[in-house]
Image 1 (cartoon, rainbow, N blue to C red):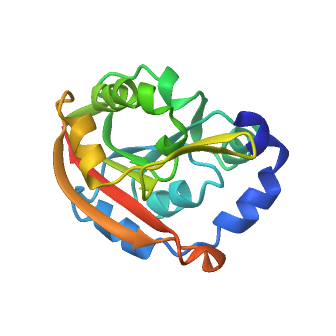
Image 2: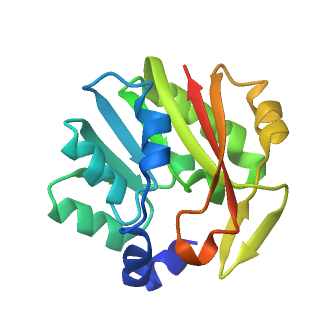
Image 3: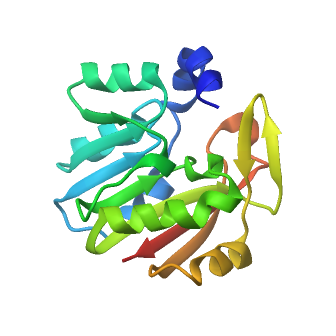
Length: 189
């Protein structure tokens, strides 16, 4: 997967930096204090890091793609070259924004990765994550995709001490993919 994003970095940035995320931002931010520390997990183009920073949040990022890391380091952000499955933060963040990133975590590893997210959150911390809507696990262009629906995420959460705050189904924000749906999940520690 890392090779795909490394090889297609500028194409990916150009396709995603312009996406209108107002609906997803509102879904997430209405549960956060006006200040705090956010981890953008799988930040890609850096679009969301830049937005949250513009609102006054202290934002850090994690991504496994060296080109994305370099781009955000050059903009002055603290970033980590890691896969989500590799992180080991302890109660450092008020919120985690995992927009279309945990979708690449193998289903068999998702519970463990969500536990790592939970461990990274401070008490009452908020986790936003999004997945393509459905039930399948597919590989496309050397990238694994884990599609989920409401019942599947609820089953996964049974063994994890995170409370489900809200679920929202949304359309893909890219014009050429308006027919695709996304499962947006909001969790609280």
